Structures are given as structure tokens and as C-alpha cells.
Image (cartoon, rainbow, N blue to C red; front, side, top):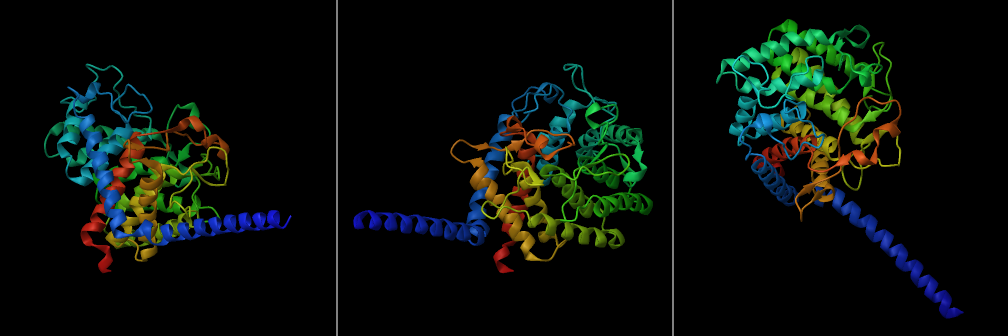
Length: 408
């Protein structure tokens, strides 16, 4: 009997010790390893190698108007898509892939600026969808090379009013017109990134900046919940769906970052920087302690299929690191939160052995319940939005490495 008691006590002690070691290991990872220079440098090298190999795999097509990109998890036959443009935006920031981006747009546009559908009838610009405007954004980098890009940009600019403004949503634009999936929740955070950086690039006068700021300001003050997080969608009357979808807030913070890169007038930039810090403060409270990532549905908390999601976590990582590096925010806690997110994705959602980026939520419209955002089948790997977000995040990490943040 005494032996049995001693055995039980020994097992209890061993179990307790394992729990303590697990907690200690988690604390060490979170506070030391996940924000270390060497670990970030190593993960950056791995990420850049993955990016390079992915681009190489997608460079062999005779023409990009008929390409079947490996990152096309939505299986669309239309190559003139916003998620391809998102990849191109990331690649342009890296400076190493300009020719790849130029070839993509050269193949997708005819000389008059219209979409090339000669060899692929599925290629088209859906003018009544905000997503489409994002496709034209990288063309600003190509304008000087060919007049067709200027023509295409003007076409996109003239199509924006067709979306229609939602007066009770701060005069923001409808996300999609004549689309049943967006008939009730007509406004989503997604469209902010699609439209406003494009508009800010198009016209640099004060009136345009003022209009953009006022619309973004409405979002900052009216889409925010009591917990500091931002609701994904709203009705035309401004009613919120009160669900925080990670990639939705990712699109929002990407819009903020692009606008701060473009708009240097402190009259608008200063309050936007304050809004950015407030947004970060809300998100950091929900950052997973162990992995540094965020769940697909940040709030409210649900359990079924609500995984630590890659694309949104990388969007957050990019914004947090880049905002600190550029001085848009000054507290280093934001920088460290961004490092944790990047290293968390690389440590937990990237298969280093096989070179696979996993747990990317494929697609979602604005939903009525948080459970509707968590379809187990929607988690895919090596998908465009996760890949593009990795390009952005790795680029921000690379800049920080070059500046050697240890000297701060």
C-alpha cells in the first residue's frame, strides 16, 4: 500500500514538474527566443528562400494571362484578381521582383488599358467590386513605362463612383454591387485597402486627402468595439456585425500603413498615427501568448475550427514592425509583438521540412455569426493572401535586421 502511495505521489510530482517546465518553456520562447535577433534572422532567411522558390515556380508560364499560379487556392480562371495584385504589391516592396510584376501586368493588359482576354475569356475586370481597384494599384509603379497603365488607372478611377457611397457609413463605398453575399452587410473593412491607397496615389491635393481621412476616421471611431477591436462589417445604416475577423482587420491596418506612407501632411498623418496605436493596443490584448499569432475569429471567442491563422497574423506582423521602424508608433512593445507574430507563423504554421505555409483561411464574406467564419475546409496552404502577407512581413523584418534593432 505504501509503495502504491509513493508511486502515485511520484507520478503527481512528475506531472507537476512537466507542467512547470512547459510553462517555463513557453515563457522563455515568448520573451526571449521569439524576439531574438538570431531567430528572427534565421526565419527571415527561410521565408525569403520560400518566396524565391515560389516565384521561380510561377515564372515558367509562356504568358501570365493564362497562368495557373500555385497560390490560386480559390481556383479562379480569371487571372485579373485582387489576390494576385496583393502578391505584386508585396513583391514591388522587395525591389528584387520588379520584372516579374511588370511581366504580369504586361500580359494582363492590352495597349488600350483594357484587360487581355484574347487567350483566356475568363480574364475580366469586375468594375462593381471594390476588390478590383486593388489590381490597379501596382500600376502606378509602371506608369512611366507605358501609356496603357495610365489609361487603365483612369478607367479604374472612373469606376469607383459606380460602387456608391454609404452615407451612414461615413460615405465609405459599398464593397460589392449586385452581389447577394454582400446585399445585407454592404460595407466591409476589406475595401479600405482596395480603394483608398489607390485614390491617395491618384490625386495628391488637400481635398482628396481630406475626403480619404474623413472616411477612414469614421471607421476608426465607429467600427471600433468596446474591447478596442474592429468589427468586420456593417449594413448600409451603419449597424455592425460585431464580429472581429482577423484578415478583415488585417486589410484595415494595411490601408492605414499605405496611407501613412503616402500622406505626409501631419494634419492627417498625426491623428492617423494615434488611431494606429489605438488599433494595435486592442489587437495586442488578443495576441496568443504561446505562438504570438491571432485566431481566425479574434472575437468573440469560439472553439470549433478557430485556428491561429497565418495571413492575418502576418499582416499584423508587417504593420507592427514596419510602423515602429518608420516611427509611426514609438513604443517598442509594438515591434516585439510584430516579431512574435512573424516568428510564430514561421515556427508553428510553416512546415520547414517541406516548404509549406499552412493555416491560411481561404475566403470569407461578412457573416452573421462567428461560427460562419470558421469552416474547417477553408484552411488551405501556400495560398495567395498568406503568401503576399509573408512577403510584406519578411520585408519589414529584413529592414529591421539591416538597421540592427539591438542597437536601440
